[in-house]
Length: 170
Image 1 (cartoon, rainbow, N blue to C red):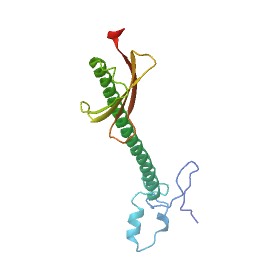
Image 2: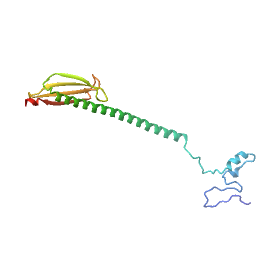
Image 3: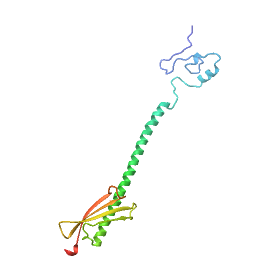
Image 4: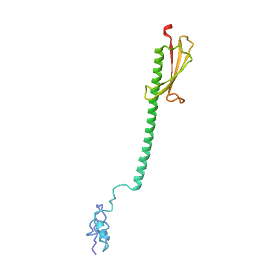
Protein backbone atom coordinates (compact mmCIF):
# COMPACT_ATOMS: atom_id res chain seq x y z
CA UNK A 1 0.00 0.00 0.00
CA UNK A 2 1.38 3.32 -1.07
CA UNK A 3 1.15 6.28 1.35
CA UNK A 4 -0.59 9.35 -0.02
CA UNK A 5 0.83 11.61 2.67
CA UNK A 6 4.23 13.15 2.43
CA UNK A 7 5.98 14.69 5.40
CA UNK A 8 9.10 16.80 5.36
CA UNK A 9 10.68 17.31 8.77
CA UNK A 10 11.57 20.98 8.18
CA UNK A 11 8.16 22.03 6.92
CA UNK A 12 5.89 24.29 8.98
CA UNK A 13 2.75 22.78 7.43
CA UNK A 14 0.83 19.74 8.48
CA UNK A 15 0.90 16.72 6.16
CA UNK A 16 -1.37 17.17 3.16
CA UNK A 17 -2.88 14.77 0.69
CA UNK A 18 -2.45 15.00 -3.04
CA UNK A 19 -4.74 17.44 -4.77
CA UNK A 20 -5.85 18.98 -1.53
CA UNK A 21 -5.17 22.55 -2.59
CA UNK A 22 -2.79 23.12 0.31
CA UNK A 23 -5.38 23.10 3.07
CA UNK A 24 -5.11 20.84 6.07
CA UNK A 25 -8.81 19.94 6.00
CA UNK A 26 -8.88 19.36 2.29
CA UNK A 27 -8.18 15.68 2.69
CA UNK A 28 -11.44 15.35 4.61
CA UNK A 29 -13.76 16.61 1.90
CA UNK A 30 -17.17 15.19 1.67
CA UNK A 31 -18.75 14.58 -1.65
CA UNK A 32 -21.58 16.98 -2.41
CA UNK A 33 -20.39 19.82 -0.22
CA UNK A 34 -18.96 22.02 -2.95
CA UNK A 35 -19.64 25.23 -1.04
CA UNK A 36 -17.60 23.92 1.88
CA UNK A 37 -14.87 22.86 -0.53
CA UNK A 38 -14.74 26.33 -2.09
CA UNK A 39 -14.32 27.91 1.32
CA UNK A 40 -11.54 25.50 2.17
CA UNK A 41 -9.76 26.08 -1.12
CA UNK A 42 -9.83 29.87 -0.67
CA UNK A 43 -6.31 29.79 0.76
CA UNK A 44 -7.00 30.15 4.46
CA UNK A 45 -4.63 28.07 6.57
CA UNK A 46 -5.10 26.78 10.07
CA UNK A 47 -2.51 29.16 11.57
CA UNK A 48 -4.11 32.25 10.04
CA UNK A 49 -6.26 34.31 12.41
CA UNK A 50 -8.67 37.06 11.55
CA UNK A 51 -7.02 40.46 11.96
CA UNK A 52 -8.54 42.92 14.46
CA UNK A 53 -9.69 43.02 18.06
CA UNK A 54 -12.36 41.12 19.90
CA UNK A 55 -15.39 42.91 21.24
CA UNK A 56 -14.12 42.50 24.79
CA UNK A 57 -10.77 44.12 23.93
CA UNK A 58 -12.52 47.04 22.25
CA UNK A 59 -14.84 47.54 25.23
CA UNK A 60 -11.93 47.51 27.70
CA UNK A 61 -9.96 49.98 25.59
CA UNK A 62 -12.98 52.31 25.32
CA UNK A 63 -13.57 52.19 29.06
CA UNK A 64 -9.92 53.09 29.76
CA UNK A 65 -10.07 55.98 27.29
CA UNK A 66 -13.36 57.26 28.74
CA UNK A 67 -11.99 57.19 32.30
CA UNK A 68 -8.90 59.12 31.17
CA UNK A 69 -11.04 61.70 29.33
CA UNK A 70 -13.29 62.24 32.35
CA UNK A 71 -10.20 62.82 34.51
CA UNK A 72 -8.75 65.28 31.98
CA UNK A 73 -12.04 67.19 31.73
CA UNK A 74 -12.18 67.43 35.54
CA UNK A 75 -8.65 68.80 35.66
CA UNK A 76 -9.41 71.35 32.97
CA UNK A 77 -12.48 72.52 34.93
CA UNK A 78 -10.35 73.02 38.03
CA UNK A 79 -7.76 74.88 35.96
CA UNK A 80 -10.37 77.28 34.57
CA UNK A 81 -11.87 77.93 38.03
CA UNK A 82 -8.43 78.58 39.52
CA UNK A 83 -7.52 80.87 36.64
CA UNK A 84 -10.68 82.92 37.08
CA UNK A 85 -10.10 83.19 40.85
CA UNK A 86 -6.52 84.31 40.30
CA UNK A 87 -7.68 86.90 37.79
CA UNK A 88 -10.30 88.27 40.20
CA UNK A 89 -7.80 88.48 43.07
CA UNK A 90 -5.28 90.26 40.84
CA UNK A 91 -7.84 92.87 39.79
CA UNK A 92 -8.96 93.25 43.41
CA UNK A 93 -5.39 93.96 44.48
CA UNK A 94 -5.08 96.58 41.74
CA UNK A 95 -8.30 98.21 42.96
CA UNK A 96 -6.91 98.37 46.51
CA UNK A 97 -3.59 99.82 45.32
CA UNK A 98 -5.42 102.44 43.23
CA UNK A 99 -7.44 103.35 46.30
CA UNK A 100 -4.24 103.88 48.32
CA UNK A 101 -2.82 106.15 45.61
CA UNK A 102 -6.06 108.17 45.57
CA UNK A 103 -5.82 108.52 49.34
CA UNK A 104 -2.22 109.71 49.16
CA UNK A 105 -3.01 112.22 46.41
CA UNK A 106 -6.05 113.58 48.25
CA UNK A 107 -4.00 114.06 51.44
CA UNK A 108 -6.89 112.61 53.44
CA UNK A 109 -4.75 111.08 56.14
CA UNK A 110 -6.51 112.79 59.02
CA UNK A 111 -9.87 111.03 58.57
CA UNK A 112 -9.43 108.56 61.41
CA UNK A 113 -11.98 105.85 62.27
CA UNK A 114 -14.03 106.74 59.24
CA UNK A 115 -15.26 103.96 56.99
CA UNK A 116 -15.46 104.74 53.32
CA UNK A 117 -16.86 102.42 50.72
CA UNK A 118 -17.45 102.48 47.03
CA UNK A 119 -17.51 100.58 43.76
CA UNK A 120 -14.72 100.35 41.23
CA UNK A 121 -15.73 99.61 37.66
CA UNK A 122 -12.39 100.11 35.94
CA UNK A 123 -11.55 96.39 35.87
CA UNK A 124 -13.24 93.54 34.04
CA UNK A 125 -15.15 92.68 37.19
CA UNK A 126 -17.07 95.36 39.11
CA UNK A 127 -15.68 95.35 42.64
CA UNK A 128 -16.74 96.91 45.90
CA UNK A 129 -14.23 98.23 48.40
CA UNK A 130 -14.36 99.21 52.03
CA UNK A 131 -11.72 101.50 53.51
CA UNK A 132 -11.10 102.11 57.18
CA UNK A 133 -8.63 104.61 58.60
CA UNK A 134 -7.40 104.32 62.16
CA UNK A 135 -4.96 106.20 64.36
CA UNK A 136 -1.49 104.92 65.21
CA UNK A 137 0.79 105.63 68.18
CA UNK A 138 2.47 108.25 65.98
CA UNK A 139 0.33 111.35 65.65
CA UNK A 140 1.45 112.14 62.07
CA UNK A 141 0.62 108.65 60.71
CA UNK A 142 -2.62 106.79 60.04
CA UNK A 143 -3.25 103.11 59.35
CA UNK A 144 -5.41 102.48 56.27
CA UNK A 145 -7.03 99.10 55.62
CA UNK A 146 -8.77 98.41 52.35
CA UNK A 147 -10.84 95.29 51.64
CA UNK A 148 -12.06 94.51 48.14
CA UNK A 149 -15.06 92.26 47.46
CA UNK A 150 -16.53 90.78 44.31
CA UNK A 151 -19.96 91.01 45.98
CA UNK A 152 -20.84 92.40 49.36
CA UNK A 153 -21.27 89.77 52.05
CA UNK A 154 -18.71 87.38 50.62
CA UNK A 155 -15.15 86.75 51.71
CA UNK A 156 -12.92 89.65 50.61
CA UNK A 157 -10.78 88.93 47.56
CA UNK A 158 -7.91 90.94 49.01
CA UNK A 159 -6.96 93.03 52.04
CA UNK A 160 -4.38 95.75 51.83
CA UNK A 161 -2.93 97.56 54.82
CA UNK A 162 -0.78 100.65 54.45
CA UNK A 163 0.29 103.67 56.44
CA UNK A 164 -0.05 107.28 55.31
CA UNK A 165 1.43 110.32 56.93
CA UNK A 166 1.06 114.04 56.85
CA UNK A 167 4.22 115.13 55.10
CA UNK A 168 3.34 118.79 55.34
CA UNK A 169 3.66 118.72 59.15
CA UNK A 170 7.03 116.94 59.33
